[in-house]
Amino acid sequence: MINNKNAPTYKIAKKLNNILKQQLQLENEYNTQNSESLACSLPTIKVNENHKMATFDIKDLYVNIPMEETLKITEQQLMKNNDKQKTKQIIAILHTILWQNYFEYQDTIYHPSKGVAMGSPISGTVAKIFLQHIENRQIKQLLDAKVITFYTRYVDDILIIYDTNKTTTDKMKTHIDHIHQNIKLMPTFENNTQINFLDILITRKKNELNINIYRKPTTTYITINYRLNHPMEQKIAAYRYYINRMITFPMNIENKRKEWNIIRRIAHNNNFPINIIKELKNCIEQNKTHQKRKYNKKWATFTYYTPKIRKVTNLFEQTGIRIAFKSNNNIQQIIRHKENIRTEQYNRSSIYALTCKTCKQKYTGQTSRDLRQGYQEHMRYIRGNNPQSAFAQHILNHRHEYGKIEEIMTLLEHINHTPSLTPYEQYFIQTPHQQNKLIAEQSPGEYNPLIQLAIDTTHKLQ
Ligand SMILES: [Zn+2]
Image (cartoon, rainbow, N blue to C red; front, side, top):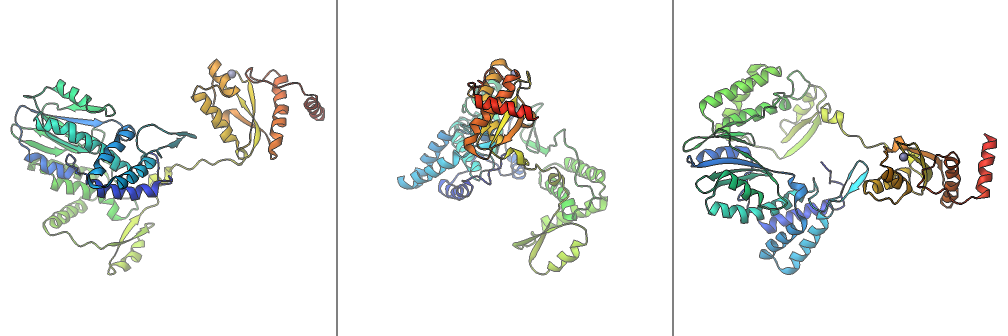
């Protein structure tokens, strides 16, 4: 995941996102907001034995959104409610933001020609504009022709019900393949009248759909262990979610009973006393029947070091400020990626050597910026198959191996005085040259008696 928060256009993207939402009135006609509401609506759908279910997973949605096309779609949509000038302004800003989708990975900067930046506030809206446009054309046609009797999408997961009187599974595949060249859909067809979508297991009966909770075979059944020093609210959060879902999903009594057993088993595996879970269930059931309690607007966050912190937070009970706890002992914080520590020695203009990992021959170079940038430049040439530097030429011609900066790059001398870089480079190039260790692609330069004198003197001094 690429973090877009420090991007130059982050703030304007946030602002423009709100403007777009207001101006476009995206209908969300073919979307589902969450699995709960879908689970509740599925049993109301009428089906017969000719109907079949399929799910599609949009492959790499965000990186495949065509930018120029989406800009055109947005422009057309905006023109419906706005004058030309305003539309033009919005599109110009959107264009600038969308092209800010570059990212850095392992010291190299990439700028893809399609796709929106992950984490940009506008990416979700742009994906919506593009997908809803396709749906309004392609899917609407199929729905109108009653080839498909039901279609819904949750972000990049799609569920459809199609009529085998009007189409076949193979035809369905072809339809789907031709929806858009940028959209690759990975199909799954129902197996033995069953299919799973999000966390819903759907079973097609004669005239209706039955639903149950679907758990991936890889589900681990691990929640925060009861014995750990975490605030109680966080420890039971997972169970609150499970129990809520069990109550809300319109499952039959038998499935509900099974689900309750699963929840109890998960609780047991994570050392929860069973009466805590039972109490929680009662509590949730009562809250469902009564109206939801009032929520105060203001929140304060406390770090939960020990249970004693409650003595402090209890003081806020009557104030209307709600307390949230955060922990500082979770795995995310322990394994969080640490910024590369750029070592001091890489940071100045210098003369350096690059050693080929295969033949150990050396290249000598200078950089007026810093070693890392010098290194990256060679790497760009090599990866781009562009023999612009003698080192890149050597690696590419011989198919020799290069390595990481710390493996192949050696600092020979820091040179603070930039005009001296070239003479020093000529000086340093002579040593590998005279030892037959200079790569053949690099020219050692013309014989220079002054440099020879310097080398001889250094040798004598050593
Ligand atoms: Zn080599």
